[in-house]
Amino acid sequence: MEALAERLSQLDSQVEGAIRVVMFYDTLMRRRVDLPALARASAGLAECVAGIRLRGTGRAIRVSPDGTETSAPAAPASTSAPITLDEEEIGTVWLERPGPPSPLDEVVLDRLAIAAAAVIEKYGPARTTMADPALVELVISSESDEGARARALRLLGFAADLPVHVVAVRSQLPLEQVGRLVCPSRPVKAAPLADVGVLLATTTDSTGFPSGVRAGIGAAESPARSWREARIALRFTTARQPIVHFDGLGALALLAHVPQDAARNNADVAAITRMAVNAEDLDTLDAYCATGSQRQAADLLHLHHSSVARRLEQIGKTLGIELAEPTGLTRARLALTAWRLLDDDC
Image 1 (cartoon, rainbow, N blue to C red):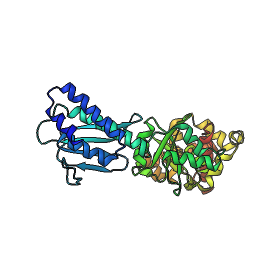
Image 2: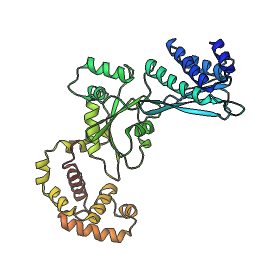
Image 3: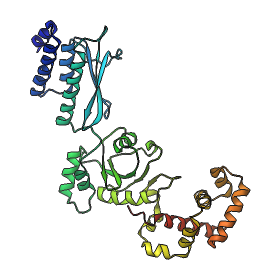
Image 4: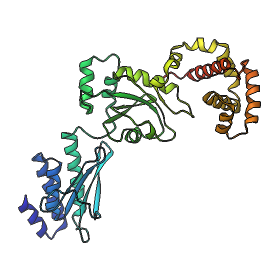
């Protein structure tokens, strides 16, 4: 290997040099090298520090030309390239050359990135976020037997001794982006199913969901049950509460099981349906139900509390509910929630 690297440094033709670089990395891959060996060989070939960093795990390998692995602060990379797998960027490779880049540095980095992706895919598990929807469906389906579910989880890279929770997501953002934000420490897998995105993760950071994303988070350790819980929780999300944990719903989760015809025929829900044509009234009632206070609702709506009081008085008359009474507020909250659940069956 050292002899090949030495011959490369003596070549005059960049074309021949590029071909030999390709051959160099083909040889490495046939020898089934791991990431540290790949970095060492690349540093020796390029005659400068070479590095590999994986985004999902945070792992970084930095090797000097003499083959010594070091964690010392890196000098500015003279050239770098992304590692991509399944069209997702999962890391970076780079060279630290004191002087100007070598004419073959770009080729070296290109082949290093390809080789690193191949190593991760083969000896991983793969660190991409997006997963085969068929495998994800096997995991969350209530009809899957435990053997098939366990095999699917293993293929997705989840350890057998860790619980896997499910998140149901509606988002205009790519699912892999959402997954990386809410599960920064991995493992996390994502797949689209119909109009709902699915995230599988051992842990989630609910503060990491970006604006505009709605998500329901399951609580059960069983993936199939967690998926059912996540879909229910997603139905309870609103613009003011875009992230809902199933275990935070408590008895409210029972509303998801009320037949829709029964809900529509309820007098309070029917009154909400008629009132909902007025967006201003609907927003006012929503703020009041969310806070339970006229003054807090006024703060939320950026209005004077007397204006909110007048609106609520009129809304109460329209609904036939005394909103100032605790029982009336409870009725309004339940009716508003039941109305939102109509025709929103995930």
